[in-house]
Every structure is written in C-alpha cells, then in structure tokens.
Length: 113
Image 1 (spheres, rainbow, N blue to C red):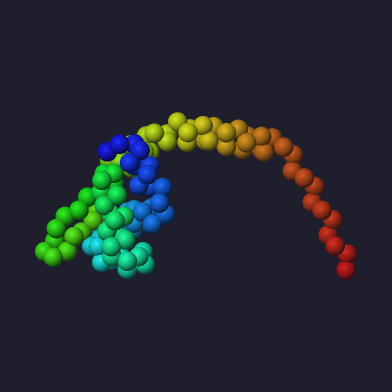
Image 2: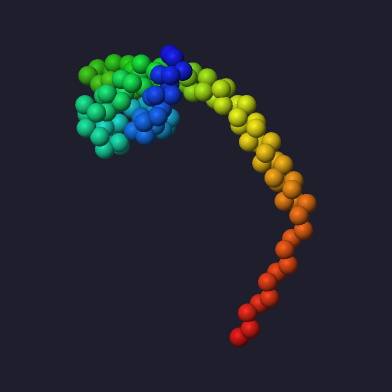
C-alpha cells in the first residue's frame, strides 16, 4: 500500500461511504450496492480501488464476496495525523484557557413589555 493510493482511495466520497459501512461490519457486495445507491459495476470499481489501497479485504462466502475493513492502513493514517491532532489540541486548550480567563459579558437588559 502506498500513501498516495490510500489518500486517493479516501478522496472519493463514495469510497468513504463504503468505508463507513464496513466500519459497522463486513458486508456482501449486494448490501454495499443497496446502501450506497450505486450500480453494481460502479460499486465494484470503488471496492477495487479500496482493495488495492489495502483498506478492505475480500473473502468468498459461497457465491458471495464479503468485504471487510482492514484496520492497518487506518492505524497508519491515524499515526500520521497524530502530530496535527496534538497541534489542534494544544491550540484548543490555549483557547479554552483564554476563554476561562475572560470575564463573562454582562447580561443584556430584559425587554420591557
């Protein structure tokens, strides 16, 4: 799996929707087609991209192909994002402290009837 293939696979909203479905549980192609509202050939093309990027794996179950999420590439993506998440958390913590130090604004006067 290359980083470029991973990013390319996740760039498409249909493929992200498929990944979200597979996060819940493994699914046969027919369920993915129905849930995504795509044609079977289009869904198969998206699944091929996800499979080649290493995001999903497939197993044969009698006549059905069942797709499951492979957590390893997601873990690698999470590790790559960790420093950026830390940066945001630090910025948000600083903002939170600043807001805590700011005196509350006075309540506006109640409207007169």
